[in-house]
Length: 210
Image (cartoon, rainbow, N blue to C red; front, side, top):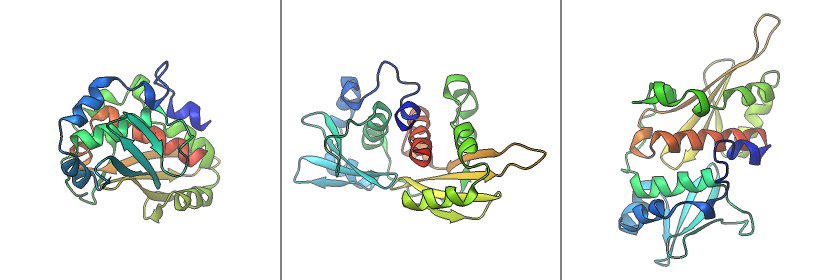
């Protein structure tokens, strides 16, 4: 299920090693130390970035144009994960989070973007945790997140070092089905474009459900 959700809109581009050259070229034009500082990543031995995403470290090697999981080098990284990592390294402006949550639809251009094929992955989260809010909290903590106030159950996770994500859950009852809202810091567009935000929410949903 994890693989399907992370890659559901990327067929046939399923893996990070299929990322088009222009995304790597965008990163190449930026001083590596500036990119690392903006994202909150490491720049190690003048060769590779170490980027935390959802409580997992990724190695981004711009010279070899490859992306690996730090502790699982044989794991094939998904295309969406690669897009998020390269986009934020190339584009992040290093703006700290405001602590104010909005939905991705409230971001500039979000209402039009997050529809149809780009709909946020709220349904599978609701199906998984609609009758098990405590399980959502447990899973969020496994991913380095924590419980916050809101809805019937709400959690916050570190999508990227300066980009928190939120999941708000209203549990199912006899009258209504479970409902989920995905939130994000209102400064998200300083770190990712809308496509990157969409990819990051998919990765988060996959990690929560997997």
